[in-house]
Structure formats: structure tokens, C-alpha cells
Length: 389
Image (cartoon, rainbow, N blue to C red; front, side, top):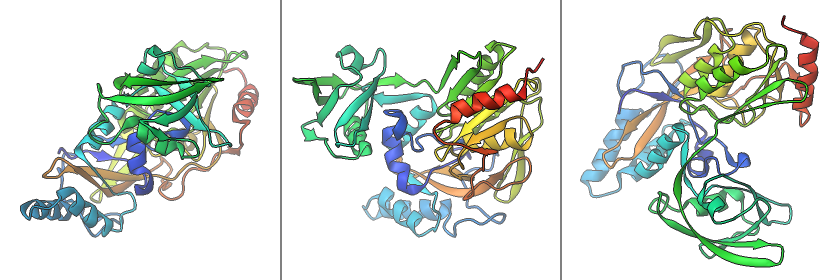
């Protein structure tokens, strides 16, 4: 593979994340990672610089090749090597999982278009149905109860397990395969067989509050999302502030986060990062809106590329940051292809905010700690910042 670096999520959530992208707002726990520009160094073992794993890409690739020569599973050998690396952000994808991952970065996923949550009673309730999806075509509605998936009862199960059933295993999680749902609406119970499809996600949504404030919600930095943020800023009323909602944003392509930063900054530093001990910098494009009042909302689900953007806006005094401490994912992963098509990722570096703050393991502390009333507090803060004119 090319020498592309990635932000990556903790190994404990990585597999579930790859299988649960955008099925429910509550489930987006790190399904997209952030890619830095290609430094042109290829897939080689990290040397020097910041702390890193003793096991590198060459070791993992060698173990996988030896396993294949011995008639064993290259992916399992790679997983064993990664587990010995001491790298808490490392992960190994099957070829199918990595394909899903790439689709996620394109703002797509394969599924039926359902969002769901588990109620306190343990019942699984449909919270949203994507327009034009197989679920919508079948007439499934918000509020319907999901009772089973392919004959497996789902009451009381974690929502992540339910979503994995909806997605199917590696052989089923592709467009055109079928899944049978047991559903209930009031006293009416029925089954519905749906065909999974390749669906698009709405990573950027825009709405205007009654006060005139524009709320730009970015759920992940998929391809094209940065320009959508810039368009939203250009189209926002000139006499009101903006709320940039990054809560639950699990990351994404770093180039898109830099483009989003360019909407609010007139050039300048966004972040510095190191790869194999070599320092590099990311800069915003000139010409952004630097006058309009801006509040950024964050929480414990704000990760990686979203933290990088938050740190840039906070350090450069461009935004007031509200919410709770962010996740703390500021390391960089590089992927390499294994002989059986699987992909291994290991940490090769870390990034820092413009003021030199390290995010990994620490997160970003907001200027004002707020909870569920974050949006209301944002309106208050923006009214206090005054008219930019």
C-alpha cells in the first residue's frame, strides 16, 4: 500500500466500529479514521522519534508471509504480532472489513438504512429510517420495535450486537445480500426480508435556529465534508453566529478537517505531526471567515481529526469550545497490505495542536464545561460575543 497514515481508534472498539458505521447516532464509536497526506515514505518500520511499538510493519508482514508459507492464516499471525507490539491503537482488518472502512471514508455504508437504540426495558426500537433505503421502501417507521434479525432474538442484547447482525458477517455484509427482520408496531407483528444496499451518509447537516444562529453538525470527516462545511459558512446569515457541532464525531480524513478549519481561519497552522521522527505541519487555506462568532461543541465521542480541528480553533482563539473533555486520540497509524489481502495498522507518530499540546491520552479540555444543555449554552455565549459587524 502507499505510505498513508491514519488516525485509528482503540483496538477494543475497532472491529465493532467497522461493522456499525452510521446505523445509529449512538453507535458511531470510531468508524472512520483520519488520513494524513502521504509523506512518500512507503510502508516501512518506524525508526526514532516519538515512542512507538517495538513491532513494526516489517515484522507483521514477515509473520504473515511465514504463516501463508506454512499453510496457516496470515491474518491470525498478524494479529498475534500486533498483540505483542504493545501498541494500543494497532488493528488488523480483513480484506472485507477494510473495504467497508474505505467505503466509510467515502461517506457510504452497506446496510438497510436503520438507526436503532435499546430502551431501558431491553427492547430495540427503530429511531430513524433513512429516506430511499431498503428499510424505508419496506415501510418500516421510526418507533417500530425490532424483535429479531435472521431469526435471532435481539431483546436485551447490546445495540452493537444488533447492528452487527443487521450488517452480517464478512460474507454477507455486501450489497444485494438479504436479511430478515422480525418487527412489531403496536399489536401488529410481521417479518420483512430486505436486500442490503450501498447507502450514502449525511456527514454534514445544517440547520438554522429561531435566533438566526446556524448549526453545522459534522458527524465524521468523510470525503467532501470539508467543502460542505465551507459552503455552509458562506451561506450562513451574516448577522448571526455559528455553532460547529463536533459531538460524537469519530474522526475522518485529516485533509477534510483541514479544509473545514480553512472555513474559519485565514491560513496559518492547524497542527504539527511527526512520522518516523520527521516533523511536518498542516496549514489552513487563506480566506476563511475570521470575524463571525463561533462556538464549537465537543464531548467524549469527539475523536482524532475532530480533536485536531478543535485544538486549532481553540489555540488560535477562533472559537469558544463548549462541552466535555474529548476522547484523546492523537496518534497516527500507517496501513500495510498483508499477503492474504488483510490490512495491518501500527502507530508511527503523533500530532500536536498549534500551541504544541499533545492530544493523545489527554484529549482537549473545553473552555466551558457543559452537559446536555450545550446547545442552549452555545446560544448564550454567541449572544455575548456580539454582532461581528
